[in-house]
Length: 75
Image (cartoon, rainbow, N blue to C red):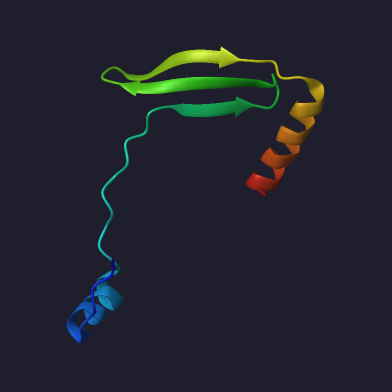
């Protein structure tokens, strides 16, 4: 549902950018270590990042695909 924009709103958005969206809460952070082929899951708590679980090592076929994706993403 969009509202019609007037000239003032458009000018303010051009000068200062669109209004910020509310922050989404991050439930879990997943990190992949390509050298050990393992996934590390963390949860953000009161004491900071707390490790939840470690998954892996993943099988060699999946690891090659993941490592290739990781290299493409970092490039």
